[in-house]
Each structure stands twice: as C-alpha cells, then as structure tokens.
Length: 78
Image (tube, rainbow, N blue to C red; front, side, top):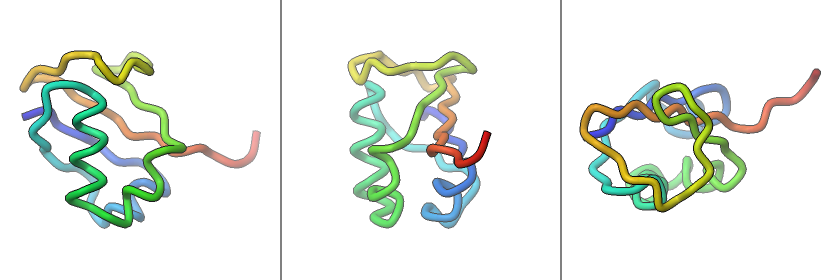
C-alpha cells in the first residue's frame, strides 16, 4: 500500500503522522483518506500532494505499493 505522510494542519486533523491506505489512483487515495479519517476529510480539498517528492495534481495518476504521498495543507505566511 502507498505510504502517506501528513504535515501541519493535515497531521493535526489526521491525528497521526503517517498511514498506509489502499488505493489505485491519487483520487481514490484522497477519497479513502477522507472516509477513514473524517476530520482530515475537511482539510484534504485545500491540500497539495507530492508523489515521491514531485507535485501531483492529476487525480487519475496511478499509484504503486512503493509510492510515498506527502499531504501538504495550505501554509500561512511568506
């Protein structure tokens, strides 16, 4: 299963620093995260996602079990 790491407000909402979630695509992963961690589901729409260190915006991107996804909420400040 892909490994998911949470940062800042996403970590606070998830209540954990990381998780492993079964999903075939990035979109499915985001949906599954929201279902398994409802408080996080409220934060996810404003998040950015890194797939193995590279920004990923395409929800149809296929995932593999060895992938790492970083969930980055919007950050305040400059």
